Amino acid sequence: MTKVDRRVLKSREAIKKALIALMTEKHLDDITIQDISDRANVNRGTIYLHYLDKYDLLDKLIEEHMNRLRELCEASCRLEWTEATLVFCEYFDQHYSFFSLMLASKGAPYFRNRFLDFLIDEFRCELDVTRGKNQGIKEDVLVRFTASAYAGVVEWWFMNEKPFSYRELAEQLGALLERNL
Amino acid sequence: MTKVDRRVLKSREAIKKALIALMTEKHLDDITIQDISDRANVNRGTIYLHYLDKYDLLDKLIEEHMNRLRELCEASCRLEWTEATLVFCEYFDQHYSFFSLMLASKGAPYFRNRFLDFLIDEFRCELDVTRGKNQGIKEDVLVRFTASAYAGVVEWWFMNEKPFSYRELAEQLGALLERNL
DNA sequence: AAACATATGTTGATTAATCAATAAGTATAT
DNA sequence: ATATACTTATTGATTAATCAACATATGTTT
Image (cartoon, helix red, strand yellow):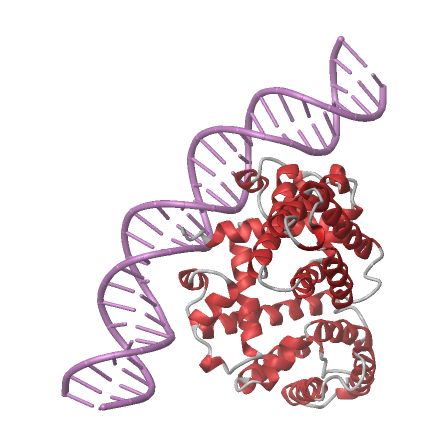
């Protein structure tokens, strides 16, 4: 694993943080590269060293979160649904501002689809329609059902500004998953 | 005025912040350059590009505050003592952690002397022993008296963790200065 | 349509920071 | 006395960021 020069890490971190901060203030279409540059305190050219444009930046930001969730998923694939879900919900809680911003923004459908695709991938690996309670149900249907339900609840939790703790969210989701899977 | 490259500013800022943070955790003598480097997320060599050693770093940090106070002094030299003191006390409040750290640390006498020297310089420019209530008093005596009193109260305020607001502090000091000068 | 202002994307020379390595000093343990 | 570990300070080659400038695109105004 090649070690990344710290300057690269610092610049990227600054740029990402700047975009998030700016997105709480105005719409992505109204944010200029110069805005990001000023906020991040990096040269405009530096942004182009790392990203194609602001959309690429946002895309990568979202991708990072998805990858991080994927890692968490791999690390917890031996757990019961409730416990695994707790790990996820903790992550959602830690990154609350990012997720709520993404869901609230004009680009919400794009983000929502990315999140849903992630969930579909993960559930597809975990579900078994050959035995047990889901015997006879089509895999695609079950996967879609479950992922959509999950995404819907999580989104609701964010858009209602955490009506209860992430632990309770995990319990509720876990119980519903156990019942269905 | 030559514009300073932003990389220099960023590195210095990070280094200074790191030192301050570390000084809340341990004594300056127990802080290594590597500690500062890690905390600031800069290369150890970078610190040496800007400072001779950690003592030089601290020295410059203190000097910056003194210079900033000097600027404030110049900007408020036309005000009444109470108003001018309010400007100072606001600065003390904003930089509370720095000042209290400096006064609490083993290096306190060094800092205290620097602060006192600053006050002596400033009062020397403002006091007039040729007329009014201080006619006949030796200038050096009056300057020393006033500066020491001022420094003493400010230090007390910090070491007692702000027993009252900086506004009240300014009022009290202002009134005492008016009485004496 | 022309003029103007602003934003995007790129380029080349320069600068500051990085990294790894080295040497020397200091403190501690054997 | 020697060995070890840690810290300080420095060095040289390399890398990433900076800055200023430029070209082009886009949007707005007259």
